[in-house]
Length: 238
Image (cartoon, rainbow, N blue to C red; front, side):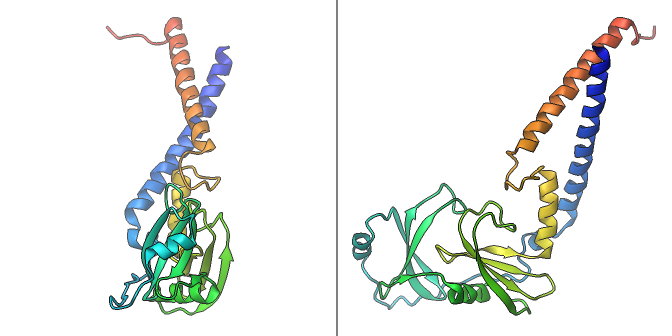
């Protein structure tokens, strides 16, 4: 029995020790990298709304009558043009699964974030030296933004950082920028949080398994120590 206890303890200590080393190395990386660059924002600029206050907007009541399933309505701006963002399905957070309608606040026309519009939005949020090489509509999972659950346009630029701008198809908002710096940081985040299955959080099977192994390491160590005490291997000097 004690032989198996010792074997389990040794293998558990090896696995736990390796992960502790990974935590230390990845934690060190987090402390030395530039956090602004790690977010992929090297070439990102804010989209500043400049909507004229003199335009006549469609009354909200008309839109609610036209889209009775709306649960939330917000005024927004896309490329300096006023729009209404109508939420038909709302998740707990914006990166959860949501369903939107975008309506031109002046004409009342339903607007879809197609490829030309997504490219224009991406260009407006980008201040780098690169040119657009491609624009593709992708569905989750999105490698650069694992938590995001909504279809989005990926607009790629040919700068030295291989920047990609992500524009949510439903709302037209910029999810974020990603580049080689962010992908480098994301790799160490994956190691640090044991997110090997790319779940986008630390509530993973790997974490639970690691907790179970750590528990076994503790229990087997305790049993082994008691066994050695009973055999008289530990003695206090007088």
